[in-house]
Length: 76
Image (cartoon, rainbow, N blue to C red; front, side, top):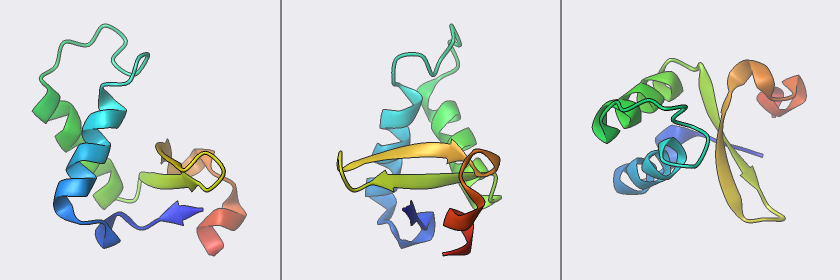
């Protein structure tokens, strides 16, 4: 299930993005400041390059590239 980023409260979205960009394996040795990485992720959402995917079974959100999610999810 996709969650439109503009329906998420600003502070909640920031925390979600911070959580995503600090997860193990997402930095790949990148020492870019947290604020910069969050801003990049936010821009990707705003440009439609990334989407927020919610898994109801695990109750967790993930950030994914639009091109990586099933096309039928984008049509819902």
